[in-house]
Length: 163
Image: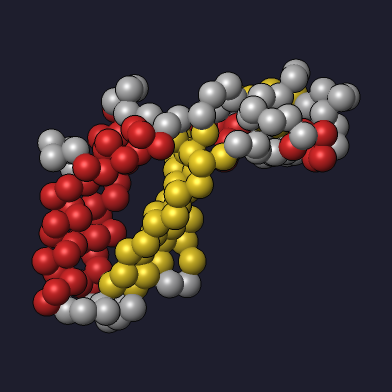
């Protein structure tokens, strides 16, 4: 069972933090033969990353929008993110090549996209929620009196929160 924390909490993290958004747009929903392979490739990659403690992936969350899924990923290094993307022995490269082959045969049927955000400062608060987002990917800590306001939490310049 998921533990709901009623008290206010925030995240704590020392070191580099990267938020990576990756998603797909399902442009022809009536053609699952064109978009389903891309959709099914992501869980395999996430499993591979989660099983490798040195991968750099700290955590992730899957969301769904009207155009398709988005995975919000938290990484501890831009270099590790790019290393995984270019690793010929990892699941990503063959999945990307397969996507490109299918995309050439049916242009516009499905799209993929990503955005990379190196984060110098981050603010978070969680009340009445299970561990999620940055607090799940890093460490969840109680909100101290000093950090009771969002502005104070954000004023820390190195992703660390006093607790």
